[in-house]
Length: 403
Ligand code: NAD
Ligand code: USQ
Image (cartoon, helix red, strand yellow):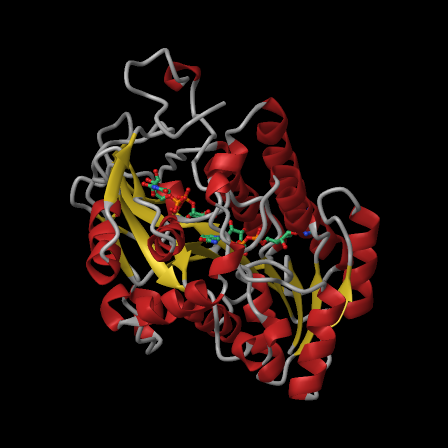
């Protein structure tokens, strides 16, 4: 297949592009390198030393004999550039990773809230409009998030995107409906993914676009078979208070003797998936497109659910590092249950990697290797969700948090 990977310089996009290239697809990466720029703005860097995109691509050609093309386009702001690239490529599929994906960054201030919505919504909408305008039957695979469902499942197993309900009309008749699962985003970033869902619903219905929306959990790990082939191919590893996700943060903290920063009691239960499975899931989704005219295919992309407390205990158990319960900078429930269906990928035969599969050790190895790049200054989560939890306003809040 001819595949365009939007956001292919990022944590999920880079290893996915390599896998698709290895599998014989013709791959073009499109990225405006905004995550690298935001790193500079925040004064942070990936724990692993990621090379320039040109160097990454040259290394891939060296080790694999395959070429991945690259175009630097801001798909949210340069509609003409995006449309021209698509017209030239006429891709069979587009994988869309190109959004601002950090919840804490999206909640920092007015500028980052506006940027996250502007960037993510325009990126998605520009892509949809361009595909319709070009008249292409391209399969669009989007990386969405489990977070759109919210965390008040009360034991209900969250279905894959749709809820089958029965409503009564005025005459008392029962009418069956299949509706998008009501969204309950917990950050402006998650809100942007909820809005994406409506854009997809409209264009799938109106223009018969073939769309798969992968509702992915928190990704952990760093390397895949392909990124391990050469140091210049190493994947990025974020651990700072904005872009670092919980398990990878805990692994870096543990290796560096930094007490694990559990927000509040750690009763928050979330969905997790290893980066190697992200890559496998995207390949499977590409090989199983919905037919034209079908509703958006929503597939949950997670291996398991775990509480933050349990994840911290697991890491502490392996490394002996202490756990520090810090005040929660976010506005989120102290504790929740979470059950979610992942029957589509399991039905396609995928045996997903679990935290207990000892892969934590593999990730710890890479963290150990780049230990000298660890900067403890960037660990505290400094982005506060509401004015109410400004240090000083709530007694005890703000330990480890500064504005
Ligand atoms: P990332 O920030 O590392 O990668 C996103 C890439 O998109 C970056 O390289 C960035 O430069 C690029 N990009 C952003 N806006 C762009 C624009 N307007 N034009 C062109 N390029 C643009 O993030 P990631 O962790 O790889 O996440 C990729 C996708 O997967 C995101 O949409 C995210 O919401 C989703 N996702 C990630 C996780 C996770 O834990 N990392 C979990 C669930 C879903
Ligand atoms: N948390 C801690 N301590 C930390 C960091 C986080 O206790 O040091 C807690 C948070 O308060 C939260 C949970 O861990 O309750 C998860 O936080 P996270 O930063 O790992 O994940 P999140 O903000 O939800 O976002 C990440 C990705 C996002 C993706 C999402 C999937 O950055 O792109 O969409 O995971 S999901 O969580 O399923 O919505």
